[in-house]
Image (tube, rainbow, N blue to C red; front, side, top):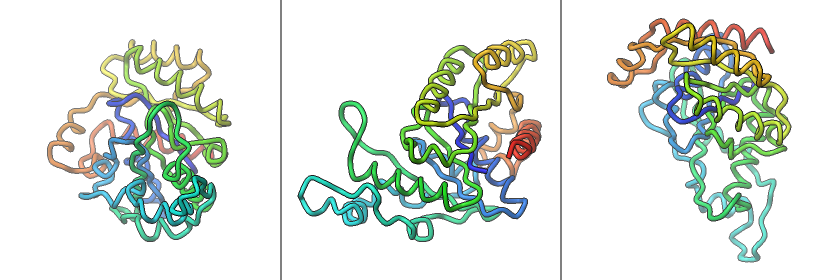
Length: 253
């Protein structure tokens, strides 16, 4: 399963992505968890104390591999990346390997630069070579392109009660469709009212996005954050719902 998890900042997508990654790994699968969000917080959801070096910060390596150090103003779009995961991935609980993409400083719109070319080549390699990949994306899904999107089996959007979150999901769906993603689903998170959850679900279904799970607001997640622990290591009703979500995702594959 190649799963991209996206949503508005603060909706809990990183918690869900990290917990899903470990749940898949507990079934004996080799899981690569890719942090493609500029906040780079996936480590907390996985239970890893320190991030490995973000790939975007490997400037010398990127410029050498893309041949951008020649000063000719051109660079390779398909640099060598097959050794990057082994060198810069961090092994975490349940055997999950964390890869942190990092951020790219860019001016104007878009970025055709060696760093972006390298990150996309790396992401494309991971998606096509590994069997189980969980991507924690930013709302703009910046690291995905038409080439990499073909490797994504499902875009899971995380929605909290509120129209701003729903509007972000609409944008994600449009962006995803533009680059070739065909399967979308949602999980409604931080729910405090069954009535509100039903209203949000109705809107999402009308948008063509089926809802695979409803996760309630759970103080246990706040406690896990305060204690510096991964949600899965603390448990609670939210984690149990994410476990049920994982089963539904598995059934889709």
